[in-house]
Length: 113
Image (cartoon, rainbow, N blue to C red; front, side, top):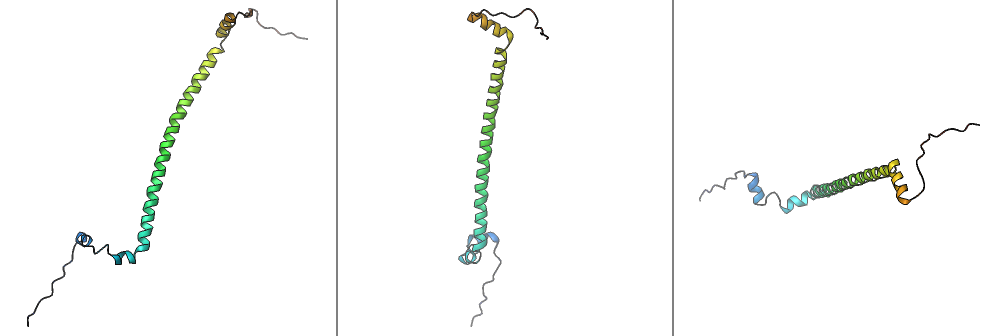
């Protein structure tokens, strides 16, 4: 009778067990399907939330640039209006149209009863 020694079991490394399929077996998935599903759901929620946040941030930047353009246009319009309402500009326009109006040289006075 021959005495054979059983092969010695040596501890395999983590990577070796992963490569040979000892970690991700069907028994592993059947035992931990709940937490795995929960973790995958959380990862999908994280990705979707991050995408939504980034797209909203881009929209905010675009609207801020548009608001800056509108504000500068409003300032330009106000400046043009203020320059058109000056007395000298109004006098030039009245003379160009040919109306017989002139600026009073006498100061206004009050009529008292």
